[in-house]
Image 1 (cartoon, rainbow, N blue to C red):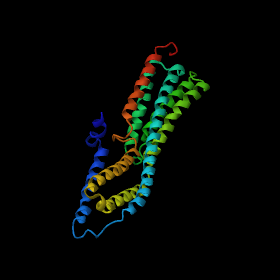
Image 2: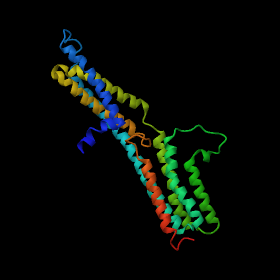
Image 3: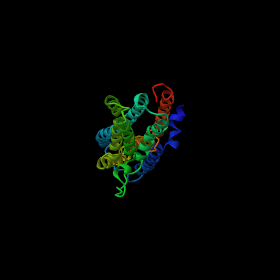
Image 4: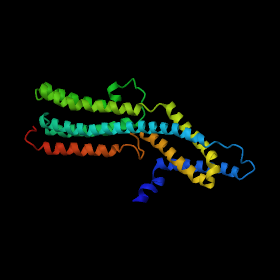
Amino acid sequence: MILRDTVFPLFTSRTLYQAGLLALGFAAYSLIPLLKENSIYRDIGDVPHEIHAALSLMLGALLVFRTNTAYSRWWEARTLWGSLVNASRNLSMKLVAFGHVTQDEAQDIRGKLADFPRILTSHLRKPTPLADPEKPPITRHLPMALVHQLYLWIERKRQSGLIDGDELRVIDAELARFMDICGGCERIARTPLVRSYRIFARQCIILFLLTFPWGVAEAFQWWTIPLTLTISYFMFGMEIVAEHVEDPFGLDDDDLDLDSLCDTIDKSVTEIFRSLTESPNIS
């Protein structure tokens, strides 16, 4: 258990592997001030160790803000997908209960509700496409197109008198959440953290690590190498993790497991339609 959670991820996780390689590079760099300390140039290029106390305060504040901002984006995305799971279940039960879904329509409606999260996943993972003037706008946005088809089906039911105004409002309350969730996910996916702030945080990390061995080599001697390795690993690890989780819809280890959430919705919707289509409330 301990090895699985501490050592093995260094080789299986792309995030930790990158942090480890960068840390090894700075550990090798820390040999330079150590060799200087044992040469005739030992009094040249020393950096007062007090400077790192000031740098560490500023760097700590930057890393905390960077990590918290990235995690808040990840958690908001997870909250939105949790809402999508609930909305899919609620809409399925309401459509089957008083949407007058026929046996012929049940498979098509169930398929649309189960397909929406997978279409949304593909929509969020691909880059924003250029507008194709030959296609109507709604066909360029597949999640919107699918919800539009569901609204057209509901409108046909309303016009035929099978759904009254009260039932329409109840169904619309759940179906409208689909596009609200889609819009929230798009905002996260299409609005990355300000690039200048990301660059500024990385510059501060590199400046700290470049000067750190020169300030502690005289006092720590050969312990400078493992100390630099450890500090570099955790600093770069926090930065790389923050970079990955700020875009939670990708395929990295730290991203949301959207495929599993899609399977959950598919199973829930299928089970609801299977159980309720056998009830006497369905025509």
